[in-house]
Length: 518
Image (cartoon, rainbow, N blue to C red; front, side):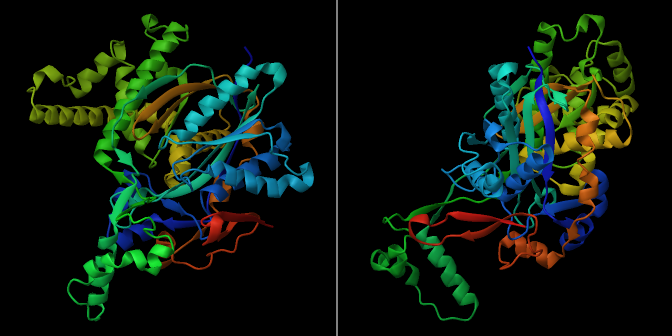
């Protein structure tokens, strides 16, 4: 079967960023812990005219222009996102609309008409799911059909102001070309999967009562010196059926509660880290089993699978996440090998569940002992050398952009390839290991074989050069953008797609309009 994989990657990120030093000063945080402990240098912040659709469309435009692709040859364009703009209409259709505007003069009206589009959502792994699906579709068409697919990813990783996740924010979009005989990296049909239904991070539809809204408004009125009579909230609710508010559509059908969706998640950081570790480890063991069955490696010869991966690409919600999470896989891939005895001699015996009481308190103590053991592994010379060689290069761009949710793993891939390009590394014919994760929770572990032509692809990226050309913003601008209260863009859009209107009434209420700003 002909090779199928990623031919090229494009990343779009906002032109604005908030420096982590300024963030630390604003929040009274320790910059050293954020920078040296988590690897954070800056976070990308979308401007007033940017959203999930514009960032995705700008990335696809960069990809199409660079490769001279005729849109009529694109059979599908699947978007991975957890920042969708609508509960029904796919954000991918907004992206398609922008691309039609941009390319119709050159390629004709409806040049994307036969392109299949859809959104795929599973927290941060949605784009990996879109890639997995598109690889299968391209492969099924056969080399003679020469199918071409585009995988798009776009997200705004936004957390509540002053929350414990605020420092991990970021934003950006990207796009991949998926085709036969790729110039960058081919991906064999060998995937390890782990799925568990957990609530480590999620964005529920939250409900608010009309009485609570009115009560809150009246409380604000009191605080600003207005005279508010007791029981006014109840009387206002009683008379709502005849009110203008009802007629305008708010609580229009007599309901007392309304659903509210927020971009900011509900999350448990410590629990999510444990879910990440367990999911990636379990998916790796599944991949290991499949690879052994397919003859990819032979554990009987003391072969260590992760040492056959010259680079390891991971989902990075913050730059050092991979460094902190991978010791679990490192451990399980070396058990019963000669090196494991050396590690045990250095750090001590691994905790065993049977040595702890079978109670909730005992489970907590066991988890603490496991965390301590993983930290001990991460401090060994063997692991530190492994991390420096295999994982570190993927952290570099993440440190400057922050979390891209679905795109984080592909940003790490670009960061690695460009760093290796600058180092003149020899990657041809070598394997990359890839570990995707999405809260909720699912992990996928797969691998790629670097193509002989990878250098000619990476030479056109200029990722770090473009990152150096961004503009820093101050605290006031950052908080105004976060709250959505700016009336104009910080930087006038140029050479990019921009959101120009959100309709406020009629049958198109809420519809978004975009335009190319030349």
